[in-house]
Image (cartoon, rainbow, N blue to C red; front, side, top):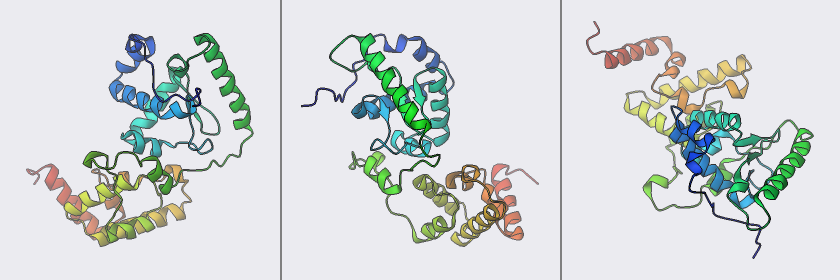
Length: 259
């Protein structure tokens, strides 16, 4: 057995009394952040504190949202907070290092020695990362499925793996392929609100055309779940007459006493 691989954390009894955890949990979304932090610790164990799929592909916020089961926005804010508190370090190649994990793993040498060795490892990769190509590899949908392959029997953990034909048509046209399962949930919600698949498809076509026309960078293109969200930004991309009718219907739903 390789004694250098650990698949458990050894947390001290005062773990949640550290300055970092006290600051973290006093934040508005602090308990969500601490949940995310623990999940990142556990996912990084196989590589002794490093988060990098197959040692070469970075975990994007979208993928972390899937594996941690939190919204992308929460993941992005959490990572920013973790960096400010010195809990994680994100290198130029996208590798995420859990900076205090050496406090919780290891069976030999002193804690100080383990931390020095870990810091040396991070610094060595930083040098390599600064020389790496600017375009980083990305995790594909197939890789996400592989990452999520663990428990499949419970309803809460089962990933959506089949989509309606109308949604697949929508997804082929939509200009940003990210967080498909969440986009599908919003798509079905909008269908229940009375929008037709044809209207949603037309909205996607018009939005995609605008993005191409304006050469919008991918990072500024709305996620599908946002485009189809309760704030209904997609309505602005429907034909004008239909959009106006739906806006009035939405306003009536929000304010039934509106004259």
